[in-house]
Image (tube, rainbow over all chains, first blue to last red; front, side, top):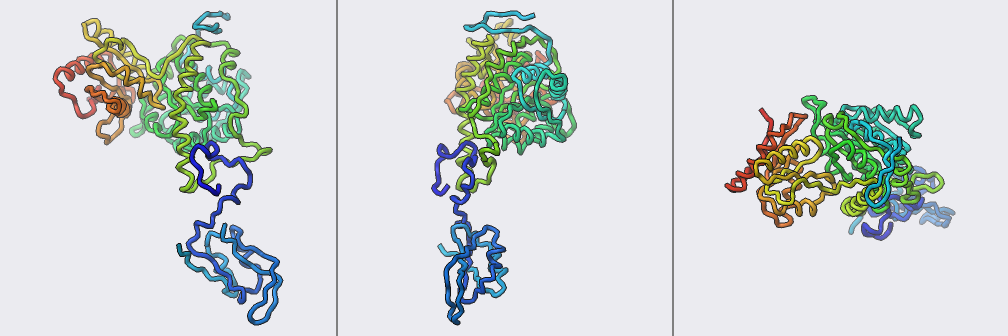
Length: 105
Length: 407
């Protein structure tokens, strides 16, 4: 349901007749604050990935070298299409590598 | 004794004429249309419908799942679930029971589930009353259900059959209430012609594939959250379906006439052709007593008539305006109250708005009567006709509801 359809174009009673169509419903627009990961501070511990209720933390096979020269094979990023900005990741991050930044229109 | 009667354009099979209370007539119709699920909780004056249906199920006359729930909230919730899975479902309630169902009433119409429910109307507590009026029905007016109000046991029997056909029509898919007078009809025995079961079932065929159903093989989600971007559109679908149901309601009534030799229309007029003074009524007792009064008034030279509203939702605005356009004065008799409204008759408000919307500027007064079965005497209605005559000649139209029978 990415485009806003008229009442004549919606299934009767608002039934969802297509399983797993919730992925089409980009819920990220609800967000008032966005989490931003400091890739240099992040220790790749997966706590944010574990706690995210959506889940909107992406674990990517993307190598990263920190400013201090430490090499990681993984990178964690936020899927902003679905992240609702609840802030749990920022709260749980043991090294405070995630900051909540206000969304500005 | 099966008697084949030629009526209307097609042959219909009348099995016989039996004495039935309106509640038993309703139960009979529910058996004849072969419902799959009955979920109900007993409450006066509805109880005897459910007792009779429980008997039918227990003795094998009706092959249905009878769910003895713990409350009316559960009764309609179970009905919603069963209907969502594709079952033909019936329930019934009155008064506090209907109030307890209230939030699920909106869910049934919003989810477009063709449940049929009988509501013998009853006054609401407090003070506690088990007696009849239509306060319960008026309180659920805006829940998006199709609402019929029957005036005889025969009509209730016929209307329940029509109701299943209308509700399940793919162009409608809405729940339907069939209401009638608590006690004065629900517990009064009248002669009722019942039809051959085969003919009734032919008239109410199962419509497979008319709507998506709960089915593990083909999962669907019903009743999901609709954000402000979606709620309005989904709700409007049901609002529009209720408006559009009128043509199907008429079509089904005509076809019922062809098959069974009876039709009722959305409104029923008595002696209206030249009527100057018209009482607008609904239900049995108010209508038939008003008709007696009209006959007496006619006997004394007053051109009196009665207009009964049978289809309450969707409101038959056009039909009503046509029938009332030539009257000199009209009174709307309500057996329910809309407290604190500018004028306190709930159906009066509909009638008044309908007339004004169509530019018909006639004196229309609101009359409250028959509250908690306060006796509505024929002479009360007779006096009303003369009151209308006075109003028409003096132009002195009361601005407030007239509370008849009140000490």
